[in-house]
Amino acid sequence: METRIFRIYGPPGTGKTTALLNKVDEALHAGVNPSHIGYFAFTRQAANEAVERACTRFNLEKSQLPWFRTLHSFALRLSGIRQEQIMQSEHYKEIGAAIGMDLVIDPRALNGEEVFDLNKNSNPTIGLINLSRLRKVDLREQYDQSHVDVPWETVSYTAKSINEYKRRFNLYDFTDMLEVFVKDASDFCPRLAITFIDEAQDLSPLQWDVAHVLEKHSDRIYCAGDDDQAIYRWAGADVEHFISLNGGYEVLEQSYRVPASVHPVAERIANRIRRRVPKTYLPREEEGKVQRISDINSLDFNEGSWLVLAQAAYFLNDVAEDLKSRGFLFNRNGYRSISEKLSEAVNGWEQLRKGQRVTGRTARTIYGYMSINDRVKRGFKKLPALEDDELVTLQELTANHGLVATIDMIWHEAMDKMPSGERAYITSLLRRGEKFNAIPRINLSTIHGSKGGEADNVVLYTDLSPAAQKAADVSPDDLHRVFYVGVTRTKNNLFLIEPQDSERSYWL
Image 1 (cartoon, rainbow, N blue to C red):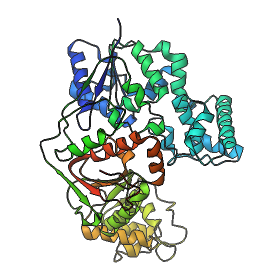
Image 2: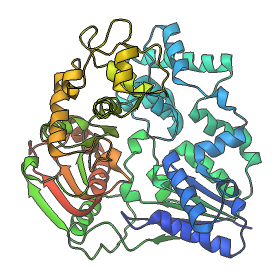
Image 3: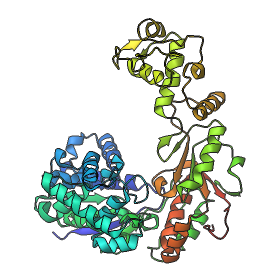
Image 4: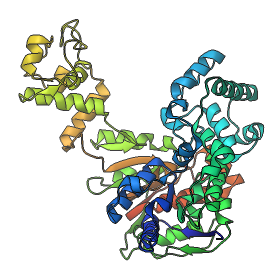
């Protein structure tokens, strides 16, 4: 039976995942065995969300949906690579020590299912090497295109050293999983009645090789995405491949997120994109609001959810400081404005003062902010005689575990080693009545980091970094897509921050 391949274009907020699950529903009602349905998401989080929604909706167990996973996970399962053979951050540290280089990288950059940023959260040399493989281009060619501030000799030597290390110890990284599958394991690909590939606009050429193996082993395949939201080309994504797929396509026509007033702004940006599939969709009936402002301090953050977005992270530095001074709890790039450790210490101390028990782990965290002798006796700082899960009162800490700080001391008096900036911020939070353990309503992020997110209110900075301005001169479509994603995150109100530099800004 000849495979039929379809594209599903999902403009912002049109419920693409729901539409795909509706097709899963149709397949199940047609008698298709759940184990013969493939659903492949771009990230582990998206895959987990899809399988959980499917299990709930169709009253299935996860074991009945073995092919609801990421492409990397799928390739790993069929490649024969064992978990203990996967490269970890300590392996890169060992390679770096051997060749006299710093190869310490963020473990999040190793999972193969997140965007591999050449500039943040990862080693630029390793990122460059990985990118050349995902794009299936020669390393030297990728080096010449990327303009990283690393000598070519260093990049070449590092690549050879990593490959030699992997061969010596029989190890594989996440890109190896894809390559091994395409080369050696594709013969073991299961026969599927229907296959879905979500966020297809973000697939790299190497991931497309995996997708086409799936195509050969599926009776029907749906590739879902939105070329207008293809903002990861710099990370290897091949949107042209998605646009050029043979076969029919459909466009989801109703957005359940984008308000009526924001829709014309989004359409105006989309129409600037030269290489795209023309598509139309309807906004929500709710009007919402688009407002241009010069100062973010004029906004009232007391109600609703907020996304504060900028093209480059450094544009958000002043915003973060302002929100701290005003006593707002927020996330920045996935990290809370008050660390879990600090929150645990302040809450824990107040619990002790109220006569409540805390765990040994919490007590140890509290002690970490106390000075020796003045607040805790020498030799007791690490609480050697207390287990992490053991419960203890303030009186017991005083009698048995060297505590000198007394019940009459409030948190900032007891924890005298707390940095002054953190002390001032916590004071502001308490004055506002923020709950430390609450999920923040306010999120600060680059536009790239916000893809897939939404909020009642979006604040969008229109300033551009010098690098973005330079890149836009070469490939303006990439910048248009970024700001298209930015304006379409809002469910109600869009606030556009007027640029500080009119010569280097994105005009909306």
